Image (cartoon, rainbow, N blue to C red; front, top):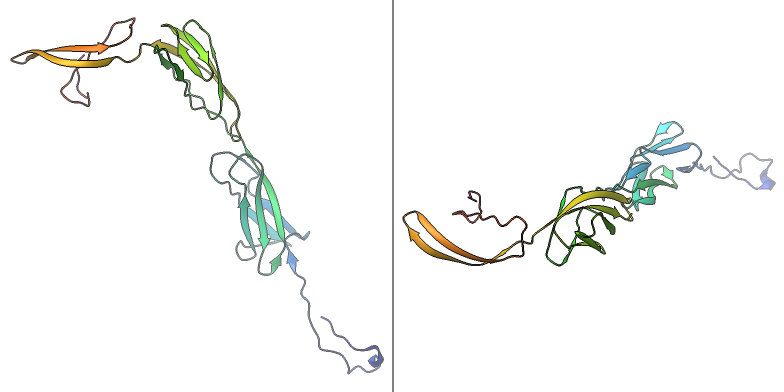
Length: 231
């Protein structure tokens, strides 16, 4: 509390001014205030990371949205710049910023075998990679690497080493998959009933196809879905 009087009235105790009070504002950046996060490290998932905040002032636990508010910035992508902003309200003032870490996630490359058609064209390789990839073939006479694609040169198999580069949110990764060269799918050009007698129908098919090392397999059914079929 404070009151005031002039110096010439110092001998008279009746000339004081009105009394005023000043209450010290409590600030979140005071030494009496302790602010912590429930977690300071996360792994990237594509979703926001929101660690809970605990604020204690002079031994008293403060209440969110009554004594302070919380907001988050840059809290999705991997990096060291994710931040929580705690701002005082009500009886509390001041603002505190706390950074936390979002680590890069692992790239999970599929190791399922690859089937590359002998089509004369380079085929893209999809193994769930998040960034650019480099390829290495163990049998260049069967499968040749062309950039991020594979081109079949002949029937056979090869081991393909896939190296995926790191990205903003994912670590680098490496996997080895087995690849087999298969003939391209044939194309049926025409289908003609040659004869029909009782329950027997003869059909003549004409198709275009490149050479197959094992011949061809024919399936037929009465339903377009091919759920019940004969081969």
